[in-house]
Image (cartoon, rainbow, N blue to C red):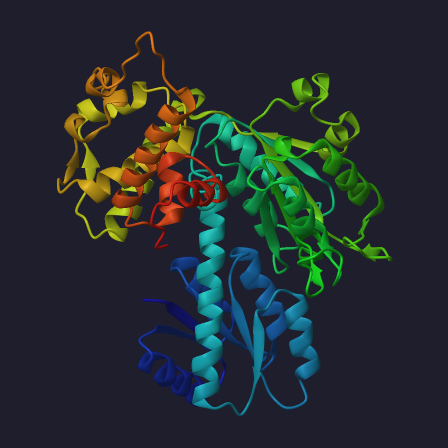
Length: 460
């Protein structure tokens, strides 16, 4: 229950304010002058102060300064009468939260106090996060306290302050590159503007170009209307280019021009359109090797790599695994209405010793799968996948292969296996494409293409 200090030299105002505040469930303390107010906040914790600027011979501004010297984070609402609004404004400059003029109505007191206390609560949470280093839960699923991930958090905070520099996020698949990009946008001045993402490896060249740059009506056969591209849609905000290493080299030239000239031209268009779009790119490829192999333009690489951020693999920050594990257990237990609460010691040892080639995404998928399929309260070794427990994989899959002198069609065999895995994954997730793509660790666009290719039911 919040405690509010009322500082006023008029007894009937103190009594009226006490009555109003106590009706809302707050505890109140009253002080007639500055000395009593200073004693009150020195002896007990106070969440909010209502301070009259006119305390007889005393200056309310001086009392305000003294209160904030003792408690710099103290939230103070000034009570001011007719003709002292200028002093109230001066109080705001000295750090007061707000002011209210006499005579005031109970409804106004209810509202301003509630808003002030909500502000105070948020400030306390932020101070607590700063004391903790804001490390354990930086943003959604970006969790950890290892030195490696703390360095990433620091880089994200710093780059968020500079809203125009391009960022290149690298790391293995499943390390959280999209989460990092979203965090940079969230904590930047562009946070109220669009965050647009596109997977450069999920679309063929012509479709990717039209998605990025847009087109004018009649630019090609199916261009029935004019369409803005994603670069233009992200104007003022952030464009996230995932799997940038898969972009065709001919399109890389056009992207480089956008980054250098800060304008675009729609397909079939005749004029340049100025844009203010921050570009964040991500890849799990080694772009330096791709440059050496002539698969990625060197000039584009250096233009993207203004601020590089590397996301370490999960196996190199094992101290974060338990935190991520607990987070996913809570999330998916609630989502699927299950009672999974914890992990047995033996299962935890197996989880910690596993190399996690799919990184945090693989860990997330494993926990989601367990919460879907298991009715147990605990995660035990028998609920874990065999690759984690170290048990040999069922050989019945291997035994289904046969190769004789007549040979076989390898592509058809592989396609048959892929189709079966996708079919089973769709069954497990209720044909939810988003969950299935996470389960199989493939891009959603790729999954949709394969669902259509293999004529599998898509009810997502």
